[in-house]
Image (cartoon, rainbow, N blue to C red; front, side, top):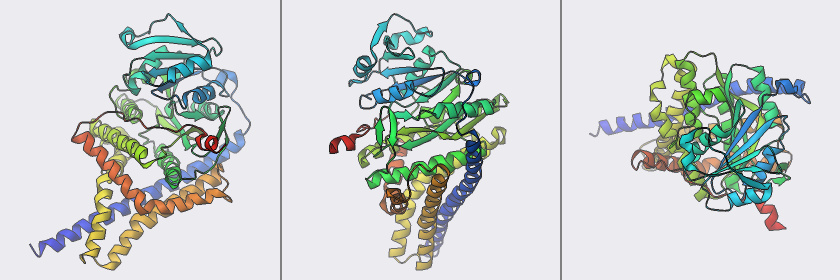
Length: 474
């Protein structure tokens, strides 16, 4: 035993060390790939600046907005969708049995009138309480139904929608006016596109006026600043890098566009899915490979959706707990993709990346940090190894986050880095001292709930609403 214990510790230490080396190496590779791709997009964007698609190339689309207890956001979000800079689109809001004033807010602000229509899919009729059309906004339809979950609401909304492209948007999000113009440019430029995701950015601390982002500000709270850094990483090199490798497995539910025929081919969103957005995308990717279709799932770095991030640790914990349960469900359902060459880059790169570094990464990070610290304190590992572990696990990751911020702002210039936005670099530093460990705990808790308790509930996150801070100060 005495001779085996040091050997066991040696292997355990090596596992954690090389895990973080592999994780940050993959991140660095994705960042390099994303950098090249983003600069190509930036040059193309300079050429296309001010250009608009001719109407005959502007594919009409339907926006689906599932809403449950969204009274603080719903009116502004719908107004933003109605004034998109686009020649032909419709907005279909599906009120999923909200218990607050979501429906009444819509009725009052958009002059809704109940109409006698039935769902094109009769089996959904039993869930629908009423259908409304707006007398002031001819493009708006509101469906009031019993609470059956987000995926089911999207499927109901899809049945009522008319157009060949479907855009799914969260009810607490606001699309930039030119977002769909830019998104559909990419669909037209790549006819083999089955689905495409846009950029999601945080509106916390910013000024929303007339349903548009008037002034982008860095949030004041450190918790929200760290989330800004997280979103930069996820959407900059995470989505962009996997897009370039044709291995993308997720399009955010806050902003994604899909071909209608593809949604119907895979039977839409899966009712009961914890993360209906990821489940749909993986299902589409599998369908494309199974049927040998010349189609792609992609990502566009210019179309922007603004959303509000959780402002408290409790609410953020609920969100990240759900995200990990969603990931766990998806990884288990589609485990046949794991290193399966039949599915190309999706099976050989995309699925393994999410399984090893996102799914298994949660318990490894949760256990790894405290174990290495305890082993150092108890004298079981030496100072050089401990310092090397900290450098790999934290400092390297911090550098990648900082590089992501620099790349994003030199490319898109959303914040003024001569001003308060410099604090985002400090947030990238602070993230490694406490936050990442709490975050790992939330993820492990989510896995425990899913695998041990069988928890597949959604878990609503409370929001404070746009301009909440500014209004409090006035």
